[in-house]
Amino acid sequence: MSTKVLNRAAKRLPLRLALMAAAAGLVLAARSPASAAVEEGYDPSAAPIPTTWYGPADPAAIRADRDYIAGMRPHHAGALTMAQEYLADPEARSPVLRRLAEAIVRNQSFEIGLLDEVARNLDRPPVVLNLGVARLAVQPMATEGLGQMQRFIRSPIPSPLAALSAPGPVTVRDVQFAKGMTVHHQAALEMARAYHAAPNARNRFLGLMNVDIITDQSQEIALMRSVTAAYPGDASAVRVDPSIVHGMDGMRHGGDHAGHPDMAVSRAPAASRAGAVPRPTSPVQAPRPPAGAAAASEASRQQPVDRDHGGHAH
Image 1 (tube, rainbow, N blue to C red):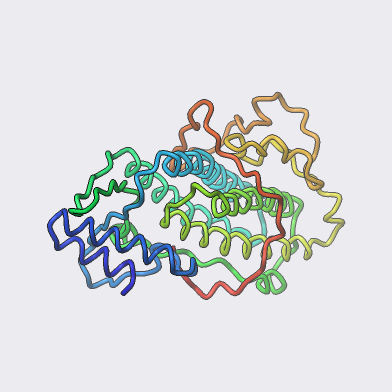
Image 2 (cartoon, one colour):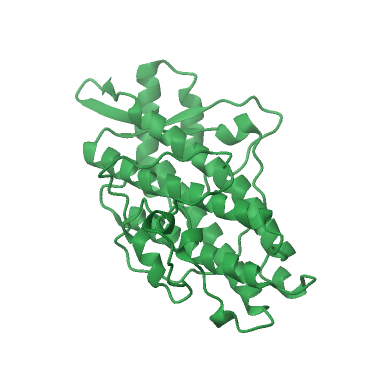
């Protein structure tokens, strides 16, 4: 029986039995491979029923989740800003990159909502389950079913082959966006992989969400590299000012992106280099992470893997 089935059945049981079902779901989740995507799909004819996911009420695990959200949420919001700025630029000519930017705004806005919902669950008090022979404290960790509640359908991204058949030349602005967003995506891959490797990171929902992030953003990097390869000039000579790569200041390696080979040396003030530049209003406002939040990825940089997407949705 899948974790989803157990969670939905739990909605029809008294609290004590529901928590027992949730505890059983935790065991199954720990044993199943991280291959399914969160909010993978829904039945349009069914009524939306949000379901709470539970996990161990472990302070170290909760702290790991909070640190992750403190880094990934503003990082996602930075991607929205970068995509919106690109779409508003008259020099943004690549139809493939424009479709990608629109998908980033839609899909990552939804993922920001998922992260916010995880944070709200972590703010709730744990529930103590009396099993008779033992007492088990479980912590609300996430809410499943937001996709159906919002009737969210994931926007697909173009395939790398689409860059080869796209009409019109690739501009310098197109290459700058592709290179800047690639650096940005690579930072998200590091953070996602670091969460998987962290011993205290036990939130199954965030783990599945990271599978989506790694799969989707690896393929998006492959697409952007294909567009860059179609540039008629010397793409290696096109540099990106660090001030246009937003959302990196919530991560320890956020200040290191200026050293990337595709990044130019910015002469802008320090505040601009951190991302505090005039920008279009984002549909999802990202609060700055709390002071002292450790939202870092210590994992070494890994090259993204270009995999077949399979059309899954968040």
